[in-house]
Image (cartoon, rainbow, N blue to C red; front, side):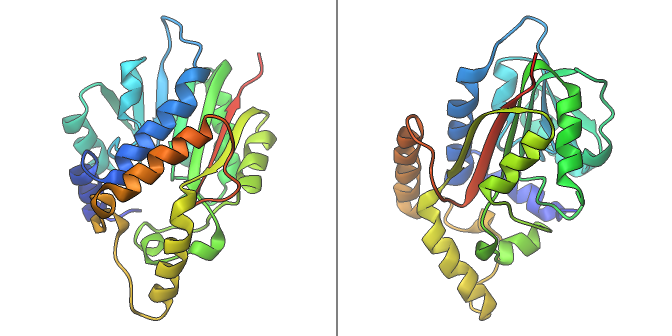
Length: 246
């Protein structure tokens, strides 16, 4: 499981760290145009931690935050009153078939506690309604493994093809599959190289909160503009959005 201190760092930095702000904007851009909102919609932020990337969902519909860690749920409960926290294991979700019209899962399938990501995504497809969405965002590129992955207890990174195949194997119709944070690939490779030589290390949450004085945030904004028209061929993250057939 993730260190409690890491959850506290995430919560403390979610509003000011450039990556969290950019990721919320990115997910909004990709997901909102695909929503088919209904009065009885309920969303699920699966393994959403403290809600650092998914708290905006409750603006559209009641949103359940399911996470294994009680400390994360308590932080989320205090920080985002619109959430409905539920303690749950991602591998044994306690929800009925067709409970949600959207399932969002950000950087969770990569975790050691989830030994069979394909089974988890099949369960997402079970609990989402026909016509509903499943959005997956995971760390990409095995060559970019570094100390942050160790701190967050990662077991794997995904290629976009692997993440897409996982969603496709769950019976979802793929409506978007792209990499993101392409501009972070070179520095991440260098950081991994330094880590392996004992010259790096530490959590990304504590590093460059401002994004090099705002530069990384600007690059993220520019990339989002490109993503309105194109899929990124490489990047630090892989994103797949699938829809459950009617």
